[in-house]
Length: 239
Image 1 (cartoon, rainbow, N blue to C red):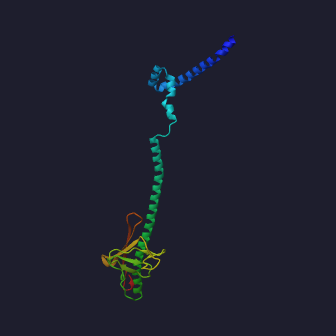
Image 2: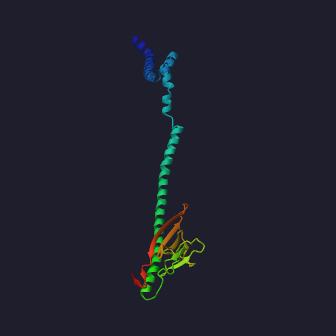
Image 3: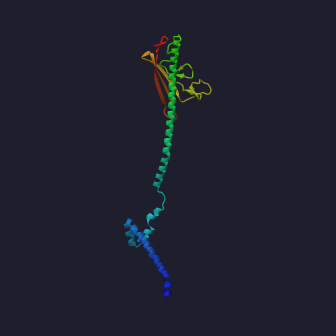
């Protein structure tokens, strides 16, 4: 008989053990939460749902499965934008600096080339005087007027810029000069202007050459060098 009573009470015993185990788990979890939010825990104690209310309506557990907030998304997009835009800006600035350095080197050589051309005129006249032909050492060099020089010629072919603005240099892909309408010559972005002026005495001149150019949408650039030349030969003989 006792065995029959025990068998009949097994479902009730199992249900009681399950309820006790659930109550133990819920109470343990609720006591942990009570330390973090005591006011809400006391309110739930008065309603008699302390453990179950914390377990079923815990906002912390609900937020664990939520996605990114709007602020977090905006911050992530901002960081990604900065990571892309900043390197691209640095690359663009580096390229612009490299192009400017290239054009500045070209302008320097074009300006120096014009000064050497004026010097060659004076030296050529020195040789003529040495051979017995009396020639003004500075003959053929325009005085106090802007002019252009085609350095491809053996002699200096100076052309005064009557309009005040000199034409841009041209190139055939290999040399700079003035094609004068020849096929294969195209205008460049460089304009070279030479200017010679006597200073202090007729035996000294100052040669100034300015090269101007524009790279893309940047402001016009210019480079100027100057050098003094002297009439250091008289009567066909060196002093």
